[in-house]
Length: 420
Ligand code: AMP
Ligand code: MG
Image: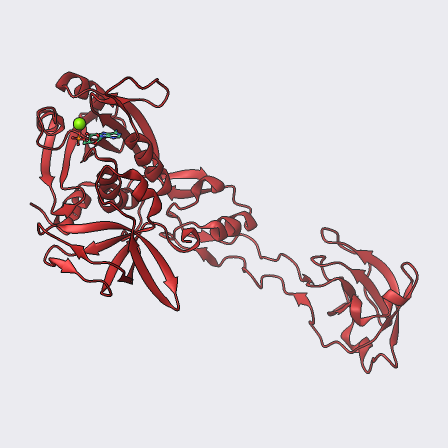
């Protein structure tokens, strides 16, 4: 039996970083940038006002106070998006709105609240300045955010909303990124029925395809649901063939020791099977291999295939541990580990068979310390306890018991803003 680390290492050894594509910027959230982005313009492009007020020559405000205002002749009004044709000459000012370019001759802005504008009825052609302003006050310099020619975003960065904003501010509508993997998902089991069908006696709805597809989406991949295969070689082969265009294939079920667990046999015939048990709980039966894909230019592509266990919790937990990292690697990401915190466990956990336990728990922060409480029965079919959990308490394989009050590592399923 392999350890979690050994299994992960083998899986990651099979998956490669995908190719680069040019995509619309808004489609790239969470993807890895595949080019260095240089600024073709200054941002902001011109000196402009940081406040609503009056563009002035700062020397004209010398000695201005509320008691002895300096009066200036107002020669124009300029809004963001317009450029005044006038020049601010000694004794004059131009009314200016935030973002409007600073007019010629002016070197500073006096805010509305530092003038007597409020006491005047309507817009006057004269304004009293009530305080001195130094040069450059409340102005934003051309290029102060980004200067033309500079390196703004580097290859390898993960694109977040702020990077999408920066790209838009540079006028970029598309950018080069490492493409998202297409992950084909095939559920196996004679007992399964799709959610669109009535439920005959003795059958259950296929939930795995949906929880797995949602996980693929969450981590940036493109899920392709292939439907349900029966527990027969022919049905399974037909299902798998529908997924050979994908970058990764995930099946659920059929990897245990039962009579109808044919996935590993089919895998062995269709490609290559690497292993099928991992020292963990839930999720011990796990298959990994490659399936022969289409041949392109005489080269046959081998598609990584992850055979997750059928139990709904096992399928999700093994996805989080293995499929997630594989997807992130294909997307060019470097940090493949789930965030893990330390929490005080509120009840004991017994580890009877030397596997690494991932126990569903709710983590809460109280008085600067995290506390983890198990979500109830830990059977691997109890999907609602996964829904209640925000983390998985990890009990190492060499530890037979953790006691209430012990500090344990918790792999967080939801992190930060999603954590209540
Ligand atoms: P298996 O690994 O195929 O032996 O499946 C183990 C158990 O998981 C089955 O008895 C089902 O109750 C359940 N199961 C398998 N596949 C699914 C699925 N796609 N959706 C929901 N439950 C499933
Ligand atoms: Mg089955």
